[in-house]
Image 1 (cartoon, rainbow, N blue to C red):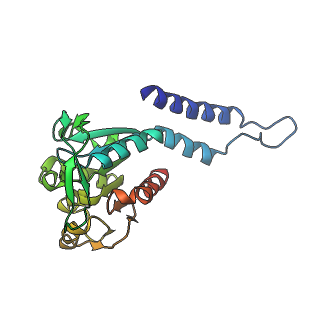
Image 2: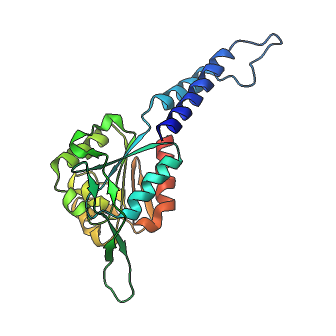
Image 3: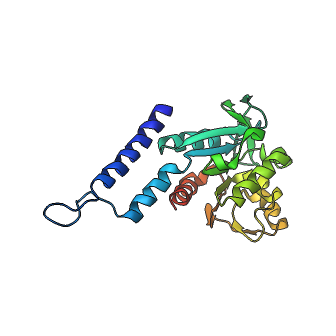
Length: 232
């Protein structure tokens, strides 16, 4: 993974160097076809300097499908996902699903996931975005003072903040949905409204740099908005 990340960074640096080298006027006059003006070069340098790390927050009882999908989707796109939990260890994950005849979702054992870092060891400045994953984990993660402080840190630094399904419970506990338009799992809509947020029943919603989704069924819409936010 690190080899791929380094290759992508080297390719961007080479493009900047080539653009700078071609900024002089050709003998025949005019700008070389592959040169960039100063504004474009500054934008390219800013993207290169920006952290490529994405923080994925979960814990025991988290949704394994949402977690693994997020991890692989960011890797595929050339980002570096880092899974954070209350402790750095193997996590016991679940799969939530809908069964006919049930008034709520069911839970089954899911794939295990290794947390790469403890939440207390994370600094928002090292990441481009945070994604709060769903499942049952947010029920207790919302009581983690260090996580709430970290979420507010991301907001203060104007980073992309994302939550899917029950992950919104962490953001409401941190007071980050007040006055914002969001979506989430229908069973935690009340958490949003109590925090002063505006709930809408849509697959995914973007309000500035706050991106939310109903559940894993909205993965296409959710990640489309996340990558748009990262490109802004």
